[in-house]
Length: 209
Image 1 (cartoon, rainbow, N blue to C red):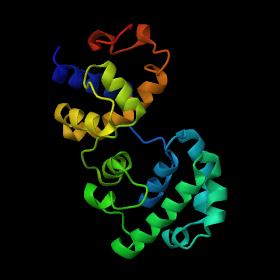
Image 2 (cartoon, rainbow, N blue to C red):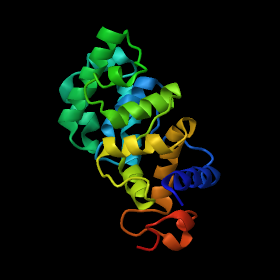
Image 3 (tube, one colour):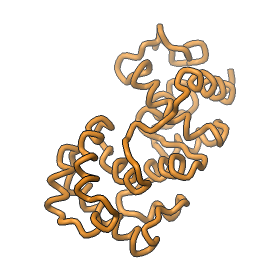
């Protein structure tokens, strides 16, 4: 199979296995997804979801985040790790959203990348989930599984993103990345992939290795 054929087969199989392709981070407002994603850096989504109810309850508006006492904000997000850096960037991003964008999350990659703490992974997630635009979220699951499937030879997120954009149907790309997370947790784990139970084993060059 060509890389294109493997990509399309992976899209088809994972769409059937995980029809509900949703982000595992819990949020209600677009900027809350931005904040939750910032907290998820080097932290599990499950832990972030334990922290955000109290966080969003304490700061129910973007203005509240912008005006937050930094020490108090740090204390709330501390369980997510790297709490000082994360708290600073969350507050600064809220301030910039209010000052530059009128409190509305921008809908372009270029503008999103101007927000403190927002990199391409977060920006792609926001573009896909909030605005329904084609997006490739090159997180650890995406990089690992795409490599095993032979869809990319790279490990750098931006290069993996570029490779997948050439292979995936734009309308499927965002959901495909969500499905890779579910697939990575259930089957294609980092240390002990369940190749014998894998629905993609027939088209995976890395099966059994």
